[in-house]
Figure 1 (cartoon, one colour):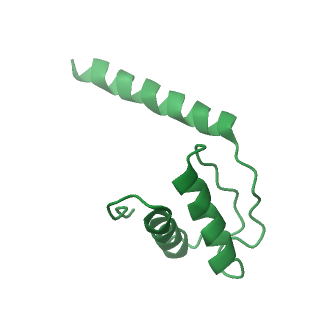
Figure 2 (cartoon, one colour):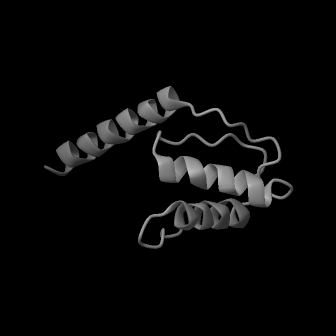
Length: 86
């Protein structure tokens, strides 16, 4: 994991994602991001700058349904953890 430098610009997000992908040796995966300009630009920058190293077959598809399901699952798990602590 890494922290995203403030302010959370496309460049800062791109650097953080690139660092994680490189450290974890993650290649040829699809990135799903919420439809926010800085995040979308960050993914485009990653593809442009590191296409040969990191995301050779990454698509431009933004899978909002998957992201939404992850958000819901994360929220649900957080609520369960909160209830168990009570």
